[in-house]
Image 1 (cartoon, rainbow, N blue to C red):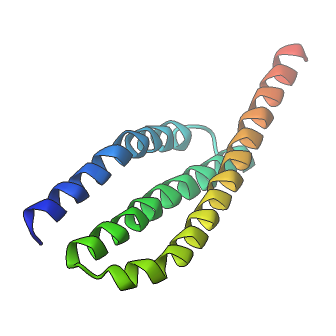
Image 2: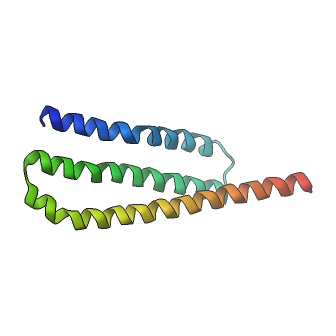
Image 3: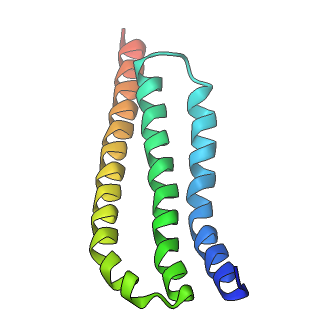
Length: 117
């Protein structure tokens, strides 16, 4: 791996690092909460978000690697596949976000009912 590709990889990782750190902190917070359906759904949502973030990181590295190799013909053929993969990752993020909001809403409703009753 030459120096230009190494810097490109490090730059891509650096852009995703804040999100990955936030996800790690979130997992620690959720894992410390009482066991139940809300906790399970929240952990699944955070796991899906982490998976999508890491997969997006790897997807962003493919074109950089192909350019570095000078393999422009392969890159042209990969554009459609990369677009489809990014669409699937977008769907994964959307599902994870809905699951996370469901867990938060359910937890807030449960807490409000406990305070009211």
